[in-house]
Amino acid sequence: MTAIYIAGIALCSVMAQWLAWTVKVPAILFLLITGLLLGPVFSVLDPDAVFGDLLFPLISLSVAVILFEGSLTLHFKELKGIGKVVRNLCSIGMVATAIILGLSCYWLLGLDWRVAAVIGAVLVVTGPTVTAPLLNAMRPTKEIDRILRWEGIVIDPIGALFAVLVFEAVMLAGKSGVLSHTLFALFKTVGVGLSIGILAGYITGVLIRREWLPYELHKFGVLALVLVSFTVSNAISHESGLLAVTVFGIYLANQDDLELDSILEFKEDLSQILISTLFILLAARLKLPDLMLLGPAVIVFLLIVLFVARPVCIALSTYNSELPWRARAILAWIAPRGIVAAAVGSVFALSMTKAGIADAQKIVPIIFTVIIVTVVLQSLTAIPVAKLLKMRQPKPSTVLIIGANHLARAIAKGLQDQKIDVYLSDPAWENCRMARMDGLACYYGNPQSEHAERYLPMSSLKTVLGLSPNRHHNALGVQYFSHMLEEKNVYSLKSSDIHAKANKDSATFLSRQILFGDNASYARLSSMIAKGGKVSATKIAEAFSWQDYLEVNKDAVPLFILQIDDEEDTQLIPFTPNMERPPNTGDMIVAMQPPKMSILKEPASKTPVSSESEKS
Image (cartoon, rainbow, N blue to C red; front, top):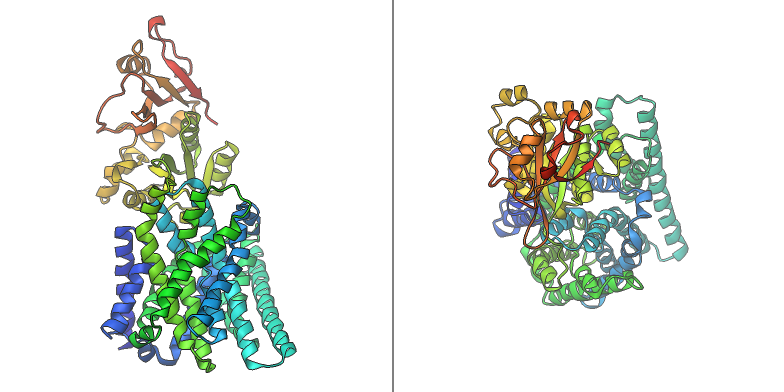
């Protein structure tokens, strides 16, 4: 029967993720609903009965992997560039939130002070898994988008670490009435967690640098070390394992000479599986009587979460900043809680229940109630609030180019010279390095990854162009972004005519391989660049029509039309076989010119107005 339950949970997890992907909301919402339906509503799934004594170890190890994956994204050098507001949000704002919510649990809900302190500490964490999808739909101004995204990224590991330290402190205080003994035990726990985490990170670095661990074992080897670090640390000092794996991840993230992209990608995939499963299991463990025990006072607590704790946090964090009041109001409203709060809180609840601490059984219902209310309410109201305060970005205009090879760089430079926002993406570091040397923004990695969702300007993307010579990379990008954006804004360039004919099995992708017309391919354009070709822009005027342009530029490959619309915004229209209209007077034509066309010689009466960008 256990195998049937596991298979059923896996199927339900995929369905919940698919529904979230379809309606473009945080997946946590449907995962919670699925768990509640399977557990307290229809009583189909009882995790305690299905897994028995294995449930707590499974949850604990899963949380350890999730925290490790989150801490892998925390680079100290990036903390210096995220601004004073984000630093304050993850320090004084975080502490203020914990104090306000902890005191509210103690005085308003009448909980044991240790339980109240743990709930307050756990609920400081937002996280990118719930914030990023909301921001993509909301499209706030760049400053707000940047602050909220970075808060989610940074507060994920820092807030989890803070919650772990608070939990350890209250658990030790509950065991000893002598302050000196409590402090000694706390320092011992912190010392063991720090030591094990740093040691695990050092060992991992040595194994990778000296190639004692083959590349194909990097992912599995690091996962094994995470699990070993967690269990060994807990064995030496109770409840220090979460601290150890968090420090382990932070240590690795700040080793600049280590290649960790494959490990991070693997951990993202594994975390998605664990998060999906964990949320269903944790939600299924909720009991309707436990929810009823919270009473009407929990409504007042929720109001404090929404309208007191977060506004106070923002007021302290933005003090003396130049943010307008509208921006502060948006920041004060958006703070959905996510997986880290649910997972860490559930682990703490199990430990405190075993220790016989009063009210420990109320931790999970309170945390899940806050998660449900914040995710649902803020997802539904984020866009109207942003419109009301006039803090939404203009229509998305950024062009994302999949690939940073020499062809992609030349096209990106040509667009950038025409004041078009361009962002490149490539999994090859050398290509990204060359792009950045040319002054082009470039994301190092796969643009459809969870990591990219944190770092790419997703809310401002308008057009996606697949310009990679690797058909697989283009296909994945087309599949991913055609759902996120309108399909008419996602294109791919054929790698070559031969490959296009050979890939008839992918009808959807072939229908997207229309960029720059039927005669354009990566091989052809790349060859033109290699021989000295360049990207140039020419304006269509009454004295130099579109037909005149075609006569003069017979060997050129038209790439884009830059059209000024009624709102004085520049519209980028790629050339495709099924274009709605030809270029008109006033439009700018961006084209790939062969070497012999580097100097245009038209009749004096038909001289185009042009601006050119040399191939970098």
